[in-house]
Length: 233
Picture 1: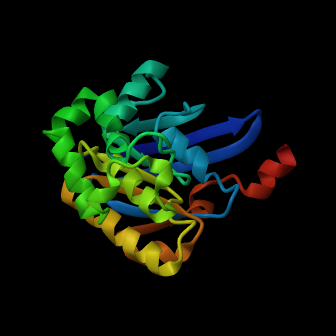
Picture 2 (picture 1 turned 120 degrees about the horizontal axis):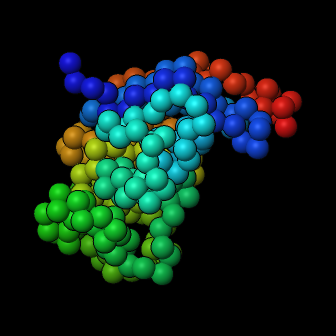
């Protein structure tokens, strides 16, 4: 049986001595598409930052693609993230003055592995943008000139280029209406399936869960409750 892409046990993290995350167990299989939901303050963002290697666990075990994040130096975790993880942020985090195509190509600039896996990065970027229904007339425009929905698709293409093994999406549809949410989810899930990437999609809206292989609630994973964190603070 193949090892899980993400393996976490007894995972713990505190903010300034305030308990934030106490996670007995969490796993994500290669190619799996999982929906994670919970209200603000439930530990979603902390968990994502741990899984992406931005934060280091203060207790327990965390392995991503069998890399032990507690034992990796900061620069090594940064390189690992660039090589293996595609991130879609809630606010997209595009570079506003860069053209659309250049924003999509950024992971290939930072990671030789992603560039190699993309084959021909310029062609891969064009293919992704076309598959995500972004008009070629927009590709040379600065990202700041695009609508929210268009920026969202650019962020998805940037996360997917170079076929990372894991895509993490943090509330990327929060600014969209229901119809646009459904369309974007279908596009993202389809592209992850085509590239073989596992997808961890995080939202506060449990109605989106039906689109995914499996749904998890933070309150069922995290032993720390939001009111406990506030009391400790």
